[in-house]
Length: 199
Length: 78
Image (cartoon, rainbow over all chains, first blue to last red; front, side, top):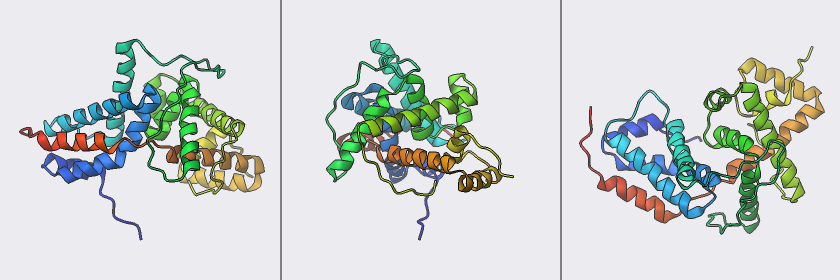
């Protein structure tokens, strides 16, 4: 039986009224999505954790100070804060991620990183870790659309508006991102779960 | 007659950005077009892996955020 899931806006309302458990639910609901998005931009575990903290500090202050706009959706707002902080981090340090050409030329700043994963199976952990590396190796424009659509849950229309391209270009970038990832996974012989689930 | 669909249509379908009618047409087209079906399967597998490749932050940082929230008592504006 499907459990009743309280909506984000209901949780925000409860939190505004002092319910800290509501905030804990929101945090647990989106912490991995926000963290992965930041991590894929900054490519450093410690920096990503700092920026995750900074993101939620902004969320806490905005809601507690009564400045949260009820009309918008919570997740896109949260992801915008995280995305902007991650990009600002590079601008401040003049360390914007290596620009990669549309033809998929290699990036120079691929990092090997220590994992702090909760998965219990080593094979899965390795696969997920490698997949995140492969996402980082995608050309910037493709990686951006993939992150915006998959992790930030923006529609292709919203992505097109946000990045100043047509919806067809946004879709094309997503297509290349998925095709490139598939090719790279095959190249590295990464076995993925072959079970197809409904979308 | 079955409509022709592109890879981009399949991606919109995968991410649930097609209307019900178009979704039904794409599903119908996939039954007759093995290439389209194969493409959908490949994209669906990657999509699933992307969702499972989420990285978890440490408990330490999550507790720190929760503690910050609990410690902040601001008078809420109407």
